[in-house]
Amino acid sequence: MARTESNMLPLGTKAPDFTLIDTVDETPKSLQELKGTTATLVMFISNHCPFVIHVRSELSQLAKDYVAKGINCIAISSNDAKNYPQDRPELMRKKAIENDYIFPYLYDQTQDVAKAYDAACTPDFFLFNSDLELVYTGQLDDSRPGNGKPVTGKDLRAAMDALINKAPINPNQKPSMGCSIKWLDTHHTSK
Image (cartoon, rainbow, N blue to C red; front, top):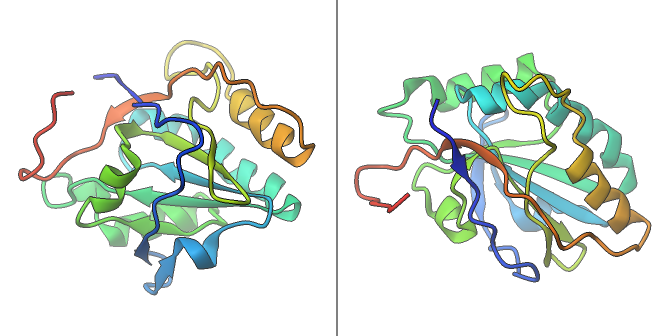
């Protein structure tokens, strides 16, 4: 299982805008219509990555715990679905329903959104404040498949709580780790 670390987009970066198809209801959704009043969490995930499978139930619970606090979650899959058919949109829809995702699960077919966010792995997390400025980009917590540590969402939850309480967010952020985004043949990356 290859491990890829997130690229850690600089804090303060403005959230790149996008409009993508929601695989659950098959309608286009934009960042502007999905953003939260307090914060917006953009997550790059996929169906088949063991790192994502490991945290799926926590992602579902996290969204449920914070939506009433004004934090909206958005999940995006940018994987090449032709070469990785388990990441096809119709299977994304199935996984979203199975895992009770209350957040939209969008498909980035061109991979332009992943490139704009400098996303590198699944899962990759980007937490933006109410002005859509990046305040946290890092891991969910210290748990990884097989390391025996419980999935708690501790690091990401601490950043979300700090934002809600208007407290400083720890600038020492550990990169997320997971499967590399499965790029189309037209995208050559050095990682």
